[in-house]
Image (cartoon, one colour):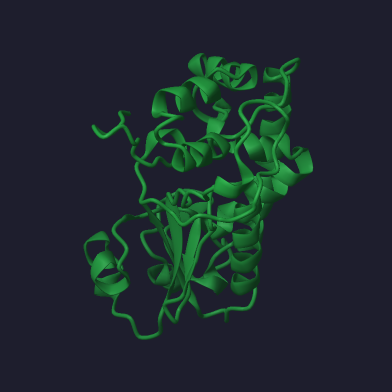
Length: 269
């Protein structure tokens, strides 16, 4: 991660991914703890959200040839791969399996999508919430004794507002120098698989165990963005938890109102 030659650093997303410069939000502040550098309220910028996965509501009559990674960009303007994110309902007829998108063997049956009536969305939410509760208990043990930390997007916003005086090197040093972040990274260094604690979920963890469960349960179904059947895109305005919550409220409300025959497709980037 390097700065540009003119001294102004390239805008970042979480942990160094490059993103376009976003618009400036006037007279706003971040809801964070009282540690780390202060960000001038009048100059705060909201970095665009990091999108790793998206749910696509497929329009009626879309041919099966479009449900491949090679055709996603052509039909939806999405460059990604099919993601086996959903569970298929167990109580289904054998012939209904052909309506699932990229199903995998096993129980539960993972698939990249299909009609809502064949997807176990409630079960997926419940399982994700239960797993998040266990993960939060582990996180509390890992960070015990460390002070609250500021999330990455706070430092990123200051960098976007003051690229010359607050370069990338200081962004990384200030964020990764926090004791709580180091505690999580040290845990991840000696842990594998499901025991990993995502540093980018720091703000979600700090919101409390129940909030983290709700966040994880909703994200399991809604992913990071949603493309409606009429082509309207729902996505968070930024990586801050408040922006993520607003998106999850909108996406959950939309998915709760779609018809049973509506086909969903999960795409990973």
